[in-house]
Length: 405
Image 1 (cartoon, rainbow, N blue to C red):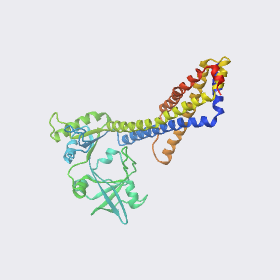
Image 2 (cartoon, helix red, strand yellow):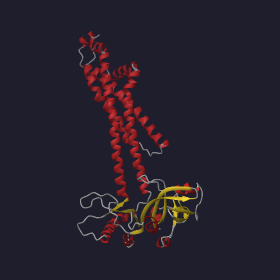
Image 3 (spheres, helix red, strand yellow):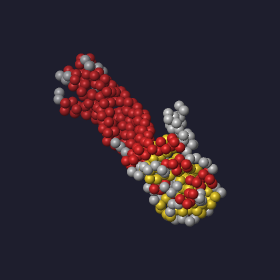
Image 4 (cartoon, one colour):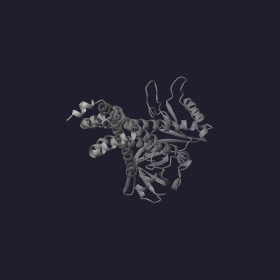
């Protein structure tokens, strides 16, 4: 019996029980769709993260207080608060650095008339918009004189401005209240969106870091320092110079660990992408369990089919069909069920990812390799779980099979 005839008989057998075939495929459909959806979410998040981080500028370096390892204990970022404005001033002497911006933050309720909003107060200096390549929507940023004098002036994020003053309104020269202080609004930043860490950049207020330290939070240390090199090619040398300068500032002797962390954009992208990929692999693994369940369902149905069609198998063997022909027929049936279920699951996975992107604003991206893997895996599941029933059918004795009732 030729291969074409075997495939034809296999398809006819499946079409005789359309409902059972469809229900058998359901496990594969759900499993493949779940894997495609999870991979799309993870890949989309990684791609969006990389774009968002790099949108800040390819020559950005962040210095955070605290080391990833201090005195044998992993403290993480911010584990040590020993970072001062003097550290930032020392970094300004490095020839590789073009801009340096101190950063100190607090949260507070801000009030204008009958409107109020709880938001992040970001204390910084005049270099931050240049580091972030962040233009103004209205007005202007504060000046170096405002920083030196700890002036009560501020620049609003777009969301804060919309909440307090309404959309499309220029609030320049208006006054808002932050705690018990009156701040004059100098302008509004253009819309930036969310960062890779999920923070909404438009939901914050910028004011001189000296103002935050002296009049709002009372702290004397910085949360972090942002710097920008003159070119992306100087990132490595600049990071090394920053580490050397910070160690001198903090009187760290050779052999002792740093009490600060220097991160370039590449470091941030690699760290957060690895975190996103780990979560994607975890979710895809969980979703992959349903593929195994679908494969078990295929095996179960194929075993039932072998029992139901015992007389048919015996008749085929009696008139000259080889055991290999019977094995191939049942194996093709299992693979067809898996491949059709996999193809339907891929389409469903695409649909789910598009719905998440359109209605939930989740970044999704379906990599081509995940589709190829899904197809190959579907075929492999069909072969693996279909082989035992197919071998059982091929091993039937023709005489005993013809006697089967």
